[in-house]
Amino acid sequence: MTTMTETSARFREFKMPDVGEGLTEAEILKWFVQPGDTVTDGQVVCEVETAKAAVELPIPFDGVVHELRFPEGTTVDVGQVIIAIDVAPGSGDAPAPAAAAPVREPAAEPEAEAEPKGRTPVLVGYGVAESSTKRRPRKGASAAPEAAAVAAAVQAELNGHAAPAAPAAPAAAVPAQGGRPLAKPPVRKLAKDLGIDLATVVPTGKDGIITREDVHAAAAPAAAPAAAPAPAPAAVAPAVAEAPAVVSDSARETRIPVKGVRKAIAQAMVGSAFTAPHVTEFITVDVTRTMKLVAELKEDKDMAGVRVNPLLVIAKALLVAIKRNPEVNAAWDEANQEIVQKHYVNLGIAAATPRGLIVPNIKDAHDKTLPQLAAALGELVTTARDGKTSPAAMAGGTVTITNVGVFGVDTGTPILNSGESAILAVGAIKLQPWVHKGKVKPRQVTTLALSFDHRLVDGELGSKVLADVAAILEQPKRLITWA
Image (cartoon, rainbow, N blue to C red; front, side, top):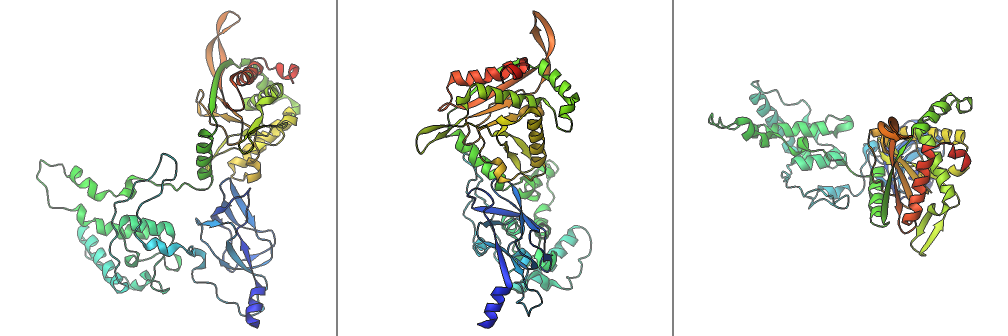
């Protein structure tokens, strides 16, 4: 009993925290430490991806890493222990960490050995077909060396070479832990899809772990006999006849798991589209004067050190339009059947990142001067591109701007960010023929699209907001007279 007490006092466990607002799980993207590494209070030990953002997790105490409970790529529930730390190293013999701790698999993994009956759709209206691939019968551990040798001989014969000798240490294909091959869940799934028994695969990964390349290597000899049928008559095109046999499903398709930020986006967009009645209005406007203002602001010493672009002026124009039409800045309370008017504007800016589209927002944007707004926009974009946007930065938005014009798109019908009343899409600014002062002249023109929740915003209010934004962009001096 004394030993147990000393051991529990010596080792401290760090659990997956709730890094957002009521999040229930997060995926471990990257470990920055390994067993045996020394860590200090506040040191970042891993990066995780929640349904809202990628977040770095610091350890709250000093010590030496004893065990990593989950490998990279694993989705872990909030509250589960992810790392164990020896806070008193050298104070006595420590129990050895579990074998292959960095690649420990979730407790539910043994169920993966059963033949899957099908896959669950990941999005409304989109699913994945039930696989027709049959798994090979599991062979005994003793058959692994012979299977590997036979596969190598067949491959060598097809290539016109003598069969190589059997590997010197084929036993590496079967780990000592109960005879179960070591492989991560994605690798096990790949083996099932290709009909490969992991017990017959020779591992090349660290600590005897089977990699994706090992599975593909094992699949290649199995496919070789099917790729070499008897010579066909000259009238038959061999390439066409043999193609289905040599091209596997994995080579023809790529499956991308929908999780983390992408999963949250999908759920939010489906929820928004089928909850809020969307209405979208469009207006095309001459923004030549706005483009001249942008050029002048870039030379203004008060704007030195901040990013100045058309989006800055458009954002300010929307804030002024909201000030003139405050009823548009609201939310729908379904539980209480109430319209909640907001007396502040948290301005969301849609940003494309490697992990998907996210919408961080500028808190209290309505109170910011033009230089302050420019600085906030620049920081928001930089943080989003670096993948460092926090969940708090994406919470509490009221209205959003999405700039599809950067992709050369004229406009679109944007879907509301969940819980918001309106979203403004800005199209590409192009030089077009335009009637100006009674004459057709080349002018800088763009198209704006405003989508709004028709429960909160009727056609008149939505039209006023969109018309005000367009009027300001056509005559930017209204930023002064209307502010």
